Amino acid sequence: MSSATLRAWERRYGIPSPSRTPSAYRLYSDDDVALIMKMRDLVKGGMAPAEAGKHLLTEPKDGVSQPAANGVHLENDPYTAACDRIVEATRRFDPDTLEDEVSKTLTLGPAVSIFERTIGPALTRIGDMWHAGAITVAQEHLASNVLGGTLIHLLRLAQPADATRRIALACFADEDHVLGLYGVGLRFTSWGYRTLMLGARTPPPAIARVVDSLAPDVVGLSVSIPPPPPRARELVDAYADACRTTAWVVGGEGAEGMRAWIEDRGGICVGKDLAASRQTIERLVASKRRRPARKD
Image 1 (spheres, rainbow, N blue to C red):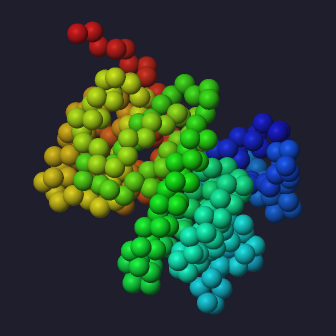
Image 2: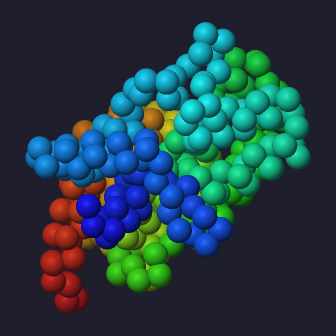
Image 3: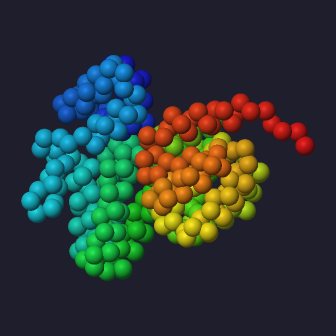
């Protein structure tokens, strides 16, 4: 395996996630080596690297990241262990420990892996605990603010300095749930995009202004709670018009119910599985970039 390939797999897919010395040298464990060999064999067998990475990250492992009888994960996987500690600090309403545990996650590996394997799952579990009445709204807000601040920091650090492509990310006009959008931004930075974050409740006219002024290569929209049908169709049409000839994608739990409308207007509905749609997104972005500019 070449060092360039190892670095590319780590940056793009979070495989492997080696620890590092104080001088930033990578230290590969036996588990890292085994994971690399599995990845190599899958790719040699014809599987796309993105699919192989997704398969290996979700594959159950003997003695690693398996739930124990009391619902707490075993701590052989550092990402899962960090997630457990963040959730437990939130449950205890211990802000100092929460801040400390979240800070420690920054040393685990690539930013996209930190989100997808630690911060994202922690946010989901904390949200489930709040909905179940196991924690208060104060505890949920504390965790969201601490984790949200970390995601902002991670996205800033992960921006590729030599990026030639840019994505603008925003939530639907009625959407307040913005933290997942930072995970999307981290995934796109791992693909070489520079990310412009617009945040929650971004109306179509704001997207049109960004498209006209900043000319992003792609616009990414997030919706976790779908609007009622008349409003949903109205927004899809408005966003499609705002994006004009720019490639645009819609993701989040609420996107699936609007798939037909999104695709009818030339967008890509990625639902909750962004990584699986990468090739489709790349093809659309490439086709849009090749299209000559219209002369008015």
